[in-house]
Length: 164
Image 1 (cartoon, rainbow, N blue to C red):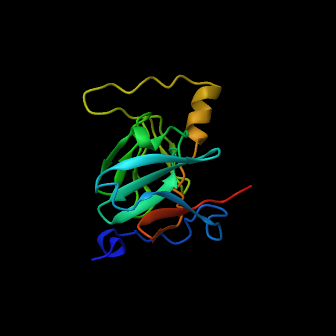
Image 2 (cartoon, rainbow, N blue to C red):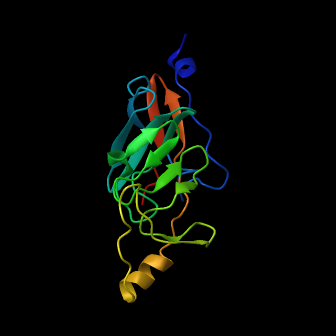
């Protein structure tokens, strides 16, 4: 059995490949079998930080930043295909790229629908006094996750890294 048959690469949801990644050169990351299912790791190329996650549908590579306020998702939790942000509790489905739970600060989802401020169970939502900060939170759009193509070559996991 080859490494390629042991490790699955998940498909990238249509239209969610990161800008420039579709035609970018591939760079080695680590041994393809090094990341167990349910684990995730931050990898860095210059000023580009990526999250490589071994999800229940296979390996994915995305920006290691929450599509809400750029917190590192690698510090969050992975459950199957769901990655949770450590900053505002937003949750994203890595099989679709969509948010499955809006951040506690509320705001606009990728389709422009408003979601109010909320709090985890057992906690009161923080007050949202009127003013420019509240307006900024209401207009902050939580975008869909962006992906970087992965492949396995000679037992190494490689990711397409845009340059420039």
